[in-house]
Every structure is written in structure tokens, then in C-alpha cells.
Length: 174
Image (cartoon, rainbow, N blue to C red):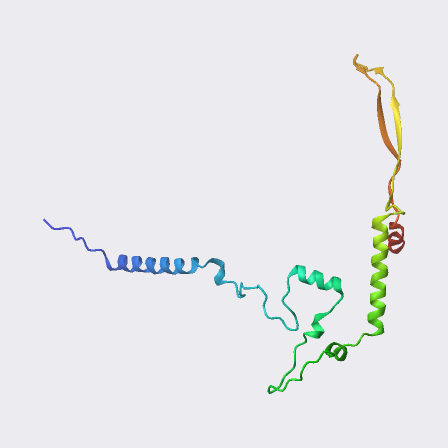
């Protein structure tokens, strides 16, 4: 009797080795997930920006209300070879003196805000003209199939609502 050979053929070893390599490669590429594809860093908690600053949202809001621009006070020095000019208290005036344009812009901004403030506090002009509504009383009656309908009201618009500020927009569209 011939003994059955328990050896695997040579091509079966190659297939199992190939499958093992493919499995390990797939495992290596699947573990980090999409991080392999992302070319950007994920640390954004105040990156160095060009001529910018790292500030919280509340700090930026407070700075915008104060009207003070610290960007000119904290300007980046262009130092070549370590020769940097010394900062003085008048750095802001030398970098950007208050100009007529700044004063005009500030006057415009304050006038615009005061106008909006007045509209919000005491609106004298409504934004929408309310529609005209007609109410009709329907008296009780008996229907065709013997049902009895009690009195009720029906409402309908005789004129549609209109935007007051929309007239200027419609003029541009025509």
C-alpha cells in the first residue's frame, strides 16, 4: 500500500505566503485610516500666521468693540542680520497716523449703528404691510345629505402682504 503524502504542493505554499503578505499589507494600510491620505497637520490651536495673531473669540470681540487695532502696535519687525529698530511708544503714530479716511469711516459706522439701533428699539416703520383680511360669517344650514352645519367664520385675503423696503429692490429688478 502506498502511503498518502501529507506534503502540500509547492504552488499552495506560494499562495498562502502571498495571501499572508496581502493580509499584512492591508492591515498596515487600514490601521491608520484616513490619516494616511490627509496631507495637513491636525494641530490648529494657534498656528503661526503671517502678520496675524492668536486670540480667543471673546478677545477678538472685545478688541473690535474697543476700536483699538493692536496689529500696528505688534507689527512684525523686518530684521536683517539682527539689526532691529527699537520700539517706542509712538510706533502706532509712525506706522499709521489717523487719517481723514479713518475718521470718515468711523463716523459712517457710528451713524449706521445708531440708525439700526433706533429701528430695533422703536420701529416706526414696519417692514411688512399687513394683509387686509375679510371675515365672513356663514349661518347655519342643512346640507344635501341631511347633515346640519353650524355657523362658522371663513377668512380670506383681499390684499396680499407687501414688503415696505422691497420697493427699492423691485425697482432694480425692472
